[in-house]
Image 1 (cartoon, rainbow, N blue to C red):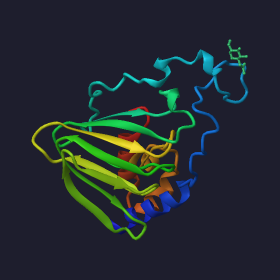
Image 2 (cartoon, helix red, strand yellow):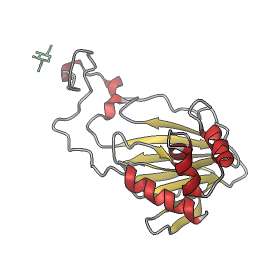
Image 3 (spheres, protein in one colour):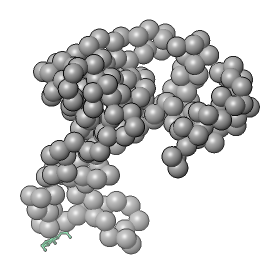
Length: 212
Ligand SMILES: *[C@@H]1O[C@H](CO)[C@@H](O)[C@H](O)[C@H]1NC(C)=O
């Protein structure tokens, strides 16, 4: 990694990190009351809550692979309201052969990643730009401390699957390439930051455009 890129990563997570723990629950559970007139997310009357409010069935199989050979299916309070106020969530991630999970970070959660299948080069970068990375395999777990940039790549000869667990109901996700080149940061700043020509910046902006 070039020094300018490294520097930008460091700046980026200082700017984007929001340190806040999920608050403790005040009741057994709080299935959000999604009535459109409710100003604040109040809890549904618990006598109306049913077992299916606590079950999520959407990650039985891998999602579609993107061009990076990667698919991730987050299960957090946004698609599984049963997690509301409980301070945790998770993600199923599948990797095609050679597939990568681009460098990214979660501003509000530490993640433990459990390898269900395969061999994955897996690591994170601390605030001194020291990299802690290794190939981990089925049955092993790696922890990515909150807010630090981390990444993974399937280095095995078949598909791989991990389960990532977060200590927040809404960990947030900042993908480094997209935050930089898929956003509306001025080209001139990116050119200066990375020592790139406008053509090079343009190429990356096209690649990471949200419409792409
Ligand atoms: C919840 O529903 C039950 C049964 O309909 C009702 O008796 C109770 O008053 C309700 N509680 C609240 C706080 O609205």
